Length: 118
Length: 107
Image (cartoon, rainbow over all chains, first blue to last red):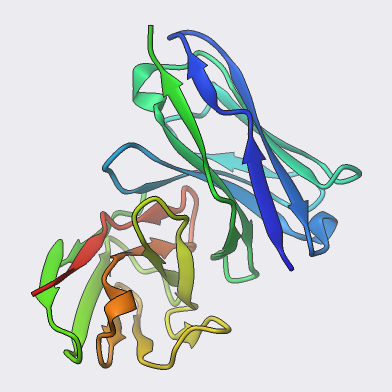
């Protein structure tokens, strides 16, 4: 069974940092592209970033480029999102997901809530 | 960036109704289009990818069509578990983008 479990969310002050983790199981993680998507309270889905299977290629939405970094450790079957210079508008539930070869998210984690507030 | 515009933003329907949601891309995305269903407090669920391919395990009352800039998600006969919010997403070019969502509500 495919499982994606996010962790690392919580309350952080504006300007602070947080690292999210996404532990994967039930599939060949090292062969899969992955992505992060977020959803602010009561709002829609926003795509943030993707990483290819070996971590050599990454892309970002304009809203997080230069502040967020996606990475992966294939030996640990874990995806990461390092978030720096956090702002109030980064408050959201953050989802990790596996991408199929049609650039669609076929499996998703349960989400982890990040709250940026003083 | 490619803008994805869904319509309507919300629709009220009854069990058994046929519901159609449209998604328009601001430029040609070929068939790089996915549809998701999301229930409150839950992660999105993939319904359709490559514009018209049904994800494994998704009921056949869901169907997708379109290519280029205009796409449609149809629910053939609405069931109680289908009342949710639906999103389209383009995977043609980075940054990938979602539509704003369509909420299917009980009439």
